[in-house]
Image (cartoon, rainbow, N blue to C red; front, side, top):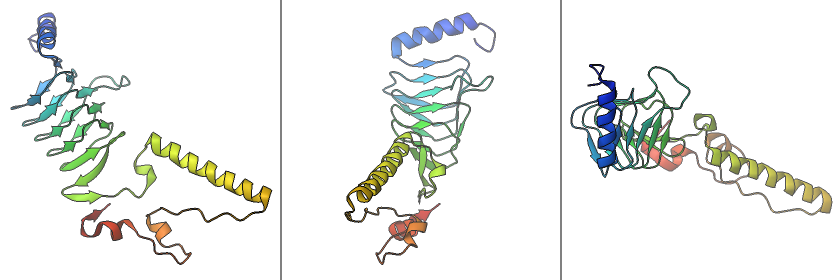
Length: 204
């Protein structure tokens, strides 16, 4: 109906289906073969979304827009993709084939084929069966991590001010870093790089 410019009837039909099932699929969305929506309450698929074949979507998933784009403003989902409950895929992004999106993830960037994405914001943890280790903080913008980093900096500053005021030596600050740079630093302590920790499945 949407393709034949019967927009009102198409929207009316989608709203009736929404009332009966809790699933809202815009009539302008492109849906592939064998889409499976499990426990579909709260699923929303936007107007310009494209969903490939053999896709599985669980409850509460949103294929939506960011409100900042015009034209194609919803995600494109490749074939054989599984999207966990509560995941939000926002904007004109592309999710590659054979991907897995973890429950509750918020995905704002393109995802390559054969990847597993988790977290808020979403980031890859597996690709083609290999673990992906993020060693560069610039690769992911995580508000919680930013807060923890700022708190760590404030604790370090407070320690310095306390030492300057009391002239008492404090115990050394714990070093929990595992990146390559800190692994090469001194102090005579054994430190591990991501490659040491993950072995054969280490990949950047």
